[in-house]
Image (cartoon, rainbow, N blue to C red; front, side):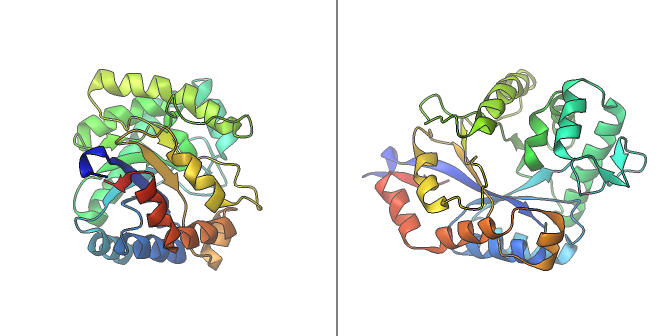
Length: 278
């Protein structure tokens, strides 16, 4: 198979900075060329200048580094006076998404908080992010997506934005209702981004139930089905430590994803499917 026939994709590890063990696992996969992008939680309590420097060294020219916009609990705003909050933290996803859908968020609060997260990334890495996505896909919701696009145009005009709409050729199952919700919300996001000149990925994959018994090794090949050149697969590899257990319910599955990407069956699958990392 010649290079001209390869589909080049993005394999993006979310949540860099969430915990030291998650960050170390992501850096390891980048160094091994098993993933080619990661997005950084600038609001995470354990994210530091040292973590940023280690990632920049690992990524070099091998991987893109993005901003993982975070507006949901248990994380806390970087801006003072952001509302609504609960005990100083952002609201949980359902509550935050509900307010966005009802257009009850304050645009000025959103703009300040999103700008602060971009500024924190800039301070840590000395440059703007290569791309932007959202923790728990919060960036695809109304109000938030418009504000985010304005900030990208102002402070990171070269960045592209992750949209979460699946390819028309992708397998779609009723067992993944989240995928259908993201398809609908991302269609609007992609149109808005095109209107203001912000690039987006042509298609997206990687959602699944995150049920404890999920078999990532069996799920991953389906993510490649119908994914076009330039498409993006989201993943959450990591190792488990006390900080991760404190902050997020997704723990052991991260180790399962990490182990899958380390296995030599993974690059063999990509080669067999005619896929290469960008």
